[in-house]
Length: 194
Image 1: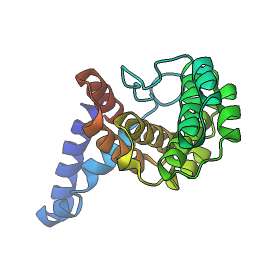
Image 2: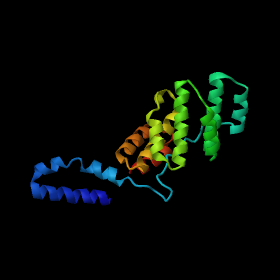
Image 3: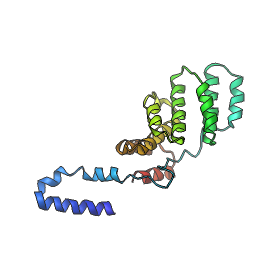
Image 4: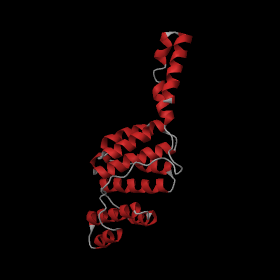
């Protein structure tokens, strides 16, 4: 509301001072105001996109570790990633970090999933620039399951916002909005943008 009033007053002022041609040059002003209006909500930093209602982590982290001990190859690596992800989403990011540090995979998709989980830990630890760096090298994100795609764009949007890169944050949130599976998540994402 305040931004709309500011815009109208600004437009009238510009038109009166420089004539109608000047208002054409300031057509970018609403976008600038939109980006400038992005703020951190709450005292705990930027609002994170709500994680999807259902995660792929259906078992406890210990169960995934037990299953991984009986497997080899890419199946074992996938189960270790599931264990790390479950630990992270349970608030045990140190355990998740230990698992991810010990995991050395050759699969491009598993490497991308690992980078997303490492970026999640970086955000939890307040190292947003580190999260952006980890995600900037992620490849084949579109080939991942929807859960990881949502996490990728949500973490990147939050990290960009925390580092002051508001235009990039809004861009990631717009991409994220198209992927979110529930209406409540889309509404929350839109509120963070506006």
